[in-house]
Amino acid sequence: MIQNILLATDGSASAERAADFAASQATRYGAKVTVLHAFTPVPSYLGEPDYSRRLYKTLDEAESVVADVPNVCVTRECQMWTQTQQRGRPPV
Image (cartoon, rainbow, N blue to C red):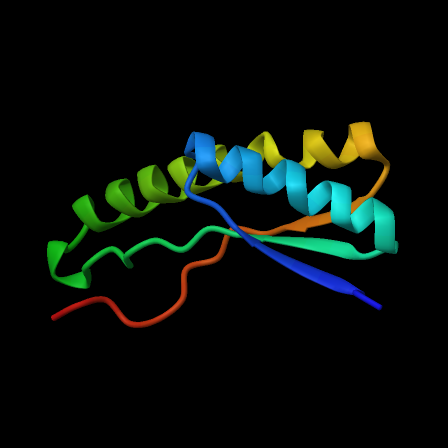
């Protein structure tokens, strides 16, 4: 039985269709959906205040990409978990 579904999204129309499919499978199997959106880390060589401005802009964009995905699960009554997090080291 499926317990967890990982949904990678980039906000595209194809990703929206994948979200709908993931939600339907989660409802069918009682699984939890985890939404992932990966992005390139902000380079640290930008220095302040440019680094912080760029970082917050990138995080806002990432959050907007995943913001509508949980609505798909609400209509299908499934569990969905989202989190925006920067991983990895900035390119040098």
